[in-house]
Amino acid sequence: MRIKEKNTLEEGEKYLAEHFRSLEKIEETNFNKVLKAFTEQKVGEEHFSWVTGYGHDDLGRQKLDLLFAQIFNTESAIVRPHFVSGTHTISCCLFGCLRPDDELVSVCGEPYDTLHEVIGIKNKYKGSLKDFGVHYKEIPLKDNFEVDLDSIPEYVSLKTKMVFIQRSKGYHWRKSLTINDIEQIVSIVKKINKNIICFVDNCFGEFTEELEPTDVGADIICGSLIKNIGGGIVPAGGYIAGKKEFVWLSAEKLTAPGIGTKGGSMFDLNRIIFQGLFFAPHIVSQVLKSVSLVSYFFKQNGFEVNPGPQDVKTDIVVAIKLKNRILLENICKIVQSNSPVNSHLTPVPCKLPGYEDEVIMAGGTFIEGSTIELSCDAPIREPYILYWQGGLNFLHTKAVLSKISFL
Image (tube, one colour):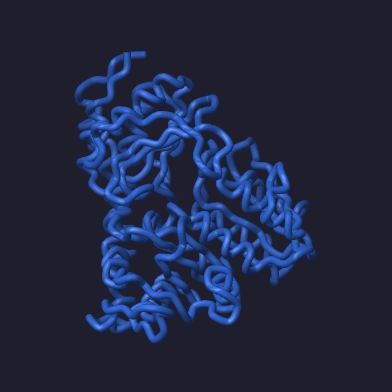
């Protein structure tokens, strides 16, 4: 393997100049959408205050729900710091909308690792959907890489209650879904039965394109506030947006039946969630430029990457097939040592809740687990694929890449 030339990064910026301009157009469209929502919803300083206890009559919380609903073009939304993670929001949607003997079909093959226990894949985990009598099927990927649209009618039927669409690749070497892909999936499913709930895990995907899944027919979506939509400054939480009925049912799993979206103290986070949302289109654009350069850099050094440097980016992750455990761990160490927080620590593989394999995670982030910030992680399994994600500042990504060389 050759040593990278010193000008690889500069060449990459020149090579990607036109791609970067296309990303800036997406940023402008999404920023205008967000600004329009802020002005039309008449966000004011009074919405930055908060209440205690049950959280009754919290004007800011109510306004955030309306703001997210407008941005995602939906009937309703719930935005709360009480969501522990993206997995938690997904779990609330699944348990809220599904009932015993309902059928759930994943159209993107095997879901992300942390959902295995939620669904009950491979084992009957106590408390999983399977344990509660929900039936589950998944459609194998075409060529082990992309959604097999032609096979959807073979798996989805009149008895199917929900199809699960995971936008991002997760810990799999597959194509992340574009909005056009999602639109095609929804169209096929609705022709089978218009009442099937089309549920999209939108984590890592917000503002990467000009439209969102709910603009093309998805019934309900969810995501994490410590990813794209939080703009890198929201310290915790998640959101669910979609048809009013499904948002309410999901909200009841977060709170309780009868309470739904009507309660919950916001712990003085209203202002920062508003502000993070306002920053988000620009931050996501910085990230997309960053992962494009990462893709170029590793491809130029002989590695297989997904997506390619100029491919459409519909999430904030680039997968790099390293095929070498030592190299994977060394790159994680370089990322960690060039992070703004905990640069003096060394990442090591370990068992984490929800993951079957040991996982190595690198990235000294201001917010723990914030994948909108520059970080990389990987399950310790062949072919040792590194998942590089985030980057609040393009220059940070460039600086870290400049420290990597291959012998």
